[in-house]
Length: 116
Picture 1 (cartoon, helix red, strand yellow):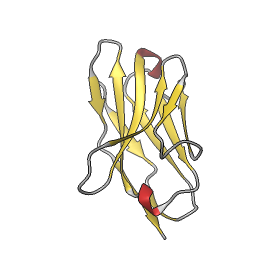
Picture 2: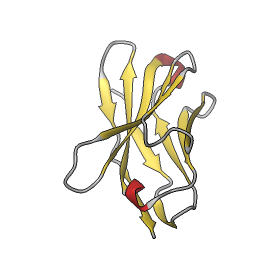
Picture 3: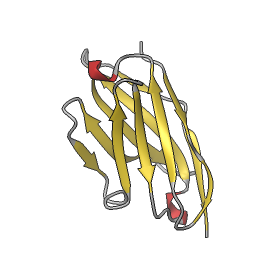
Picture 4: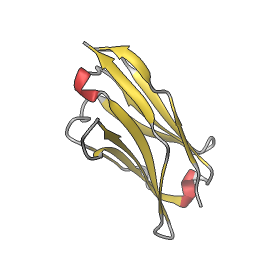
């Protein structure tokens, strides 16, 4: 089993920045993918960003050009740097990992609120 702890959410004005963290109980080098999703009230989870074990990254359309996913293997932590935040970015942000055994785990989420 892999435990995930997200942090870094909060309230910010439009145009501001936040950096989310996802600390994992397993070495990030032993995980295939680490991903971020967001979920606004009444909506399904939406893909935000992914970093593969190789370091390659993918982004959802709303994140491209504004968000950056990165990984610190020494700290077993993945980050999501979010710049130029918009009110429509308001959501709970979840970390998700896929292990090399093919198992997936979710974190508890961290709230991001962007005021206009």
